[in-house]
Image 1 (tube, rainbow, N blue to C red):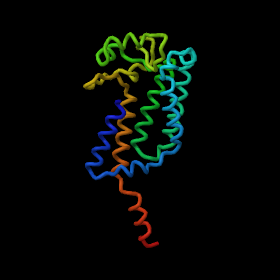
Image 2 (image 1 turned 60 degrees about the horizontal axis):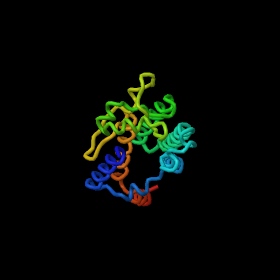
Image 3 (image 1 turned 90 degrees about the vertical axis):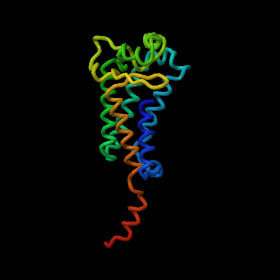
Image 4 (image 1 turned 180 degrees about the vertical axis):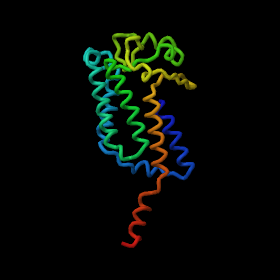
Length: 197
């Protein structure tokens, strides 16, 4: 949710400033299959039929960290797209680091979760029979300042996010805006044809 809202706002601002959705559609990502595979795996382990299964409960941490690894490789293959993608990649690396050193889970601040999602979310987070990529932070967890500690409320609820999430979101929004606002590639091609050799 946090990722989508700023990206949509960036897209609308770009259109108001003369940007084009065509430019976004023409954006050529390298290794996009790795990023899509990562998203697919993360969605798959949250399917109700699998989320409670012993297979996922026993191996989800390794599966989740592997999925993050695929996303990082995909992001790193696209650093040529500029500062925006580098910002998003940094955020992803920070999140993956925190998750990896905390046994495949992102620690989440209990007070922040209660403030944004209510006491019921705390109960669900403690359920050992349901997989979740976050868990309530413990004093023994490491790099807690980079974990989910930023409460963000929406009209219909809210969630808790990390510094990495903020960097990912900012990078994606900047990439959407910058890509939509760039001059059409066809214009550059026509200029290249008419320029003297």
